[in-house]
Image 1 (tube, rainbow, N blue to C red):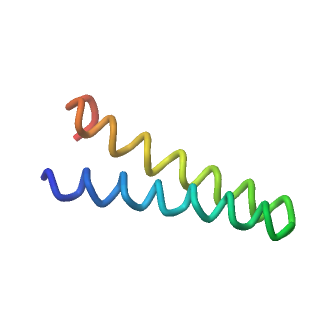
Image 2: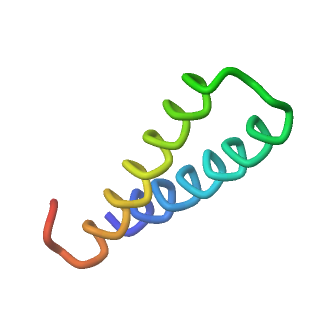
Length: 55
């Protein structure tokens, strides 16, 4: 499932951009933290799937 890896990584990068944008707009810290956690989880899942560790 190579497509899912790509989707997870692109979604993680999109959310990382959202973290930057929300921080710049001075949104509440809880929203920024939740978005950062979601971004990290998507990026980690995509990388682990590429490595074949998590299927």
